[in-house]
Image (cartoon, rainbow, N blue to C red; front, side):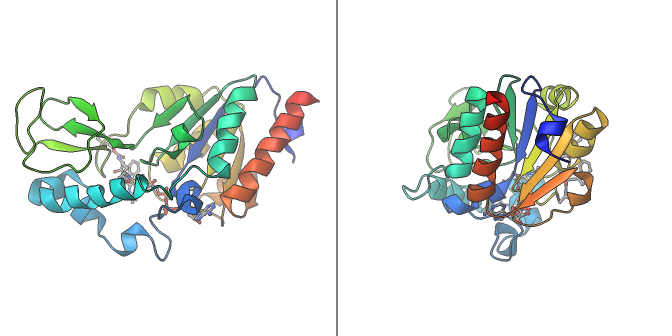
Length: 245
Ligand code: BV8
């Protein structure tokens, strides 16, 4: 099977990314041997129960990651930039759905972008839902500027057991895309890991671009394996050749 035989430039594209696309920018993944879940337990730092039980520990976990994201060394890599360029030239339109909470896709040029697991750069009041950006460290002593509650400010991040964001918009896009591409995700976390099946059921051609086969590899019609900064730009170049042919 090849791209040319399965898609045309008028087909909408949906792309799903995970932590692997940001690895070469210097941000850790979750389930690699040196990953985040090797140092922290999900139930201690990434659930609403953890936030209720020990808000300082949870806020500290995200404060460290927010500071890492803001490090001058952490820049969009060639994979982020290739996806930003794709959105600029693909006639059928591109929707980029990321599980990542870093800001590298926007900084890499992507605009039609959904952060389904939220964004480290945004802070939300757990009481009134007010959303603010540009805060450095979040502390339990902070007071919500909107409702005046104290101790309710949290990262605008989707924890385990919480509903991911913009699922209706994502579902509609999966139901009408001609190409679904999954990049840099292990296929461990739902509902994101189920998107490939949803897209394929509706007739999309499905491709996995990853360092190694994910848990869902057999669900894709095509798989290409290697570092994202190599295989993603090559893949985008092939799409550009399709448009120009
Ligand atoms: C929900 C934000 C429902 C926080 C995260 C079935 C259906 C629905 C839900 C479930 C289900 N089964 C289980 C569940 C519950 C749960 C879940 O999936 N649990 C798992 C662990 C079994 N799901 C949920 O709780 C979700 N919510 O379903 O709500 C609901 C219904 C009604 C009402 C209310 C609720 C919410 C899940 C979101 C949780 N938040 N993140 C944070 O970031 O701190 S998830 C977390 O995992 C991150 O978002 C991360 O992005 C995501 C997935 O991880 P990956 O991105 O894939 O990263 P990973 O390290 O695993 O893999 C990296 C890959 O990159 C590897 O394959 C590696 O080989 C590759 N790689 C490495 N280097 C490179 C590379 N690739 C290319 N180049 C390289 N250089």
